[in-house]
Length: 293
Image (cartoon, rainbow, N blue to C red):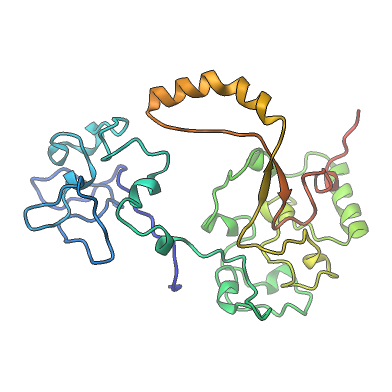
């Protein structure tokens, strides 16, 4: 297993794991209980421990008698379900005890070290072996661990951004396929499709850091970004005043109802990352689409 991997601490769900006959069934990814926290863990004072200093149900949960309540009857929407809740993200609760910096997942797309050499370990997250980047390879020679359609789902959601799922279908018209092939050649870019000619994640996104593949080659021709660790960058925009005013009342009502502090702002992208062409000005869209007035 790779040295660094994201650590996810899931505290709820449904399953059939029984720790003892007299105890309710627990989810398969339920946080371990009955052990003392290690020295790397800092448990806040308000998080109760057992008589021997071990983790118990009441360490994380504020619901009365939760240790005697079956999973399906636990009110996970209660503000007392998690101590100090509600939390916008479950990881926000995890970081009450766990060191956030030490539990972050590496950005495996950062594939060049400070000397510009390939981090070969990062290649093997997706490939069974390190490909020859100077050679034009067929799909079968890439030796991907899973198919191109599914390779991204090991780390990413199927719907990580607006309209992502709608894009992952076979182009509706023959004309669109023709445009893709035509523009790919004209712009010297690679637009991979599935074996069924479906648009997939890597049709628009490239998994490789700029410079891993020669930018003169279609597979390496992509949006330039100097600091991939920093990723996508945004800037404030004057339209935010209108955007915020439109949503202010609804957002306040939502936060009050859910005991949360969600905030939104309208920003514009200034730096894109891991795209085959810029999308903020429509260049990428025009590879497939023909917009008419």
